[in-house]
Length: 499
Image (cartoon, rainbow, N blue to C red):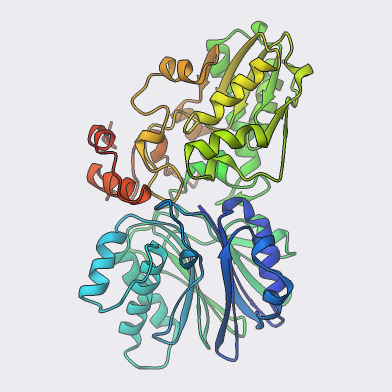
């Protein structure tokens, strides 16, 4: 999960990109970077940390130019993230290209070998984004063959990228002296949209980055589509995939995206309201509403679902936890020990809302279970008589390989466990999960043009069709710096999409 932005303007863009990255900060807190172009020269600053910490006045002054890119990032491979892996990435041939990428390549390992042995390109980091940049650069070089660059060359290069690259990718690239190229994978797994103001065109991961910088949302890029914007602001677009099909990541709607964003025609906020509505039916079948005194959300993504659930069940809705906004999101922190320690730093219970009551806690999802375990104990410590826990998402039973930080099965509390076993681990009195098909319907009904979602972490069906047990074992091994959990990987059973 990363946030990316690109701008072509007739005015300096450094402040604009900075502001857009602040609006996308929720998509990554480990690193940030901006690159701008002036007189065919790139100016770049990137570092580990959040946007407000990475960029100082001196850094901003050193980013001149009227077009540029930005990215906020968290790593999904390895636990020793280095400064060199912060984006954007740069390659000097052909033309000079810088790139930002949101997603995860499932065949990065094979591509890296191919780039070295066949294409004679060197990869200097462990980042799959650098692999993607070099594949794109190689294909642009092949299509131009020394000729002046034309949009048709770029669209042909993207066609070849789609044929070589597997996985999820939303990409924005700046080509020195020419303009900005953006494209989305043929399944549209990761989001990318475009907007305009009077004198600017902006591309961003979420519509909130457009609206918050006073751009009018225009549309989402279609899966497989490429868009080229020249330095004068003239835009051309072309479908570059053979058989594109929109299968956006459903976890974006459950948790990742800001609620005020609209993605692929679906309001994230309305999607979460709908999840609360379907979850209410599951709660009634497990715990009689008469046994629940109050509904309390676990901040923050679960609030719409919890409010809708409480309204439908005729129960009081209360804020029982206060969030310290100056602590990072525990979900994206590496290491169970750090994650467990941070929960108490991040949340504090309002004892009066718990004391002597049967409380229903509502969370957006339960991934590792560590946070849920701590929060349930916090509710008990605050005096709750009984603690029920409801998840607006189904059990996360399978690794995600498309750019979300939960690739190893060993980290998933629901993997190879029954709901009752998970309940016992978390320590709640009842555990209620959303149903997979109900989740898909609740969100999909908001845009009937979407025929399916990537819901692989819930149903084990990987929409790109190229992910098997061996791939997950390798990707899991990369995430933990080569220390594979062979036992869990070998037991992972992937369901048949026809089931």
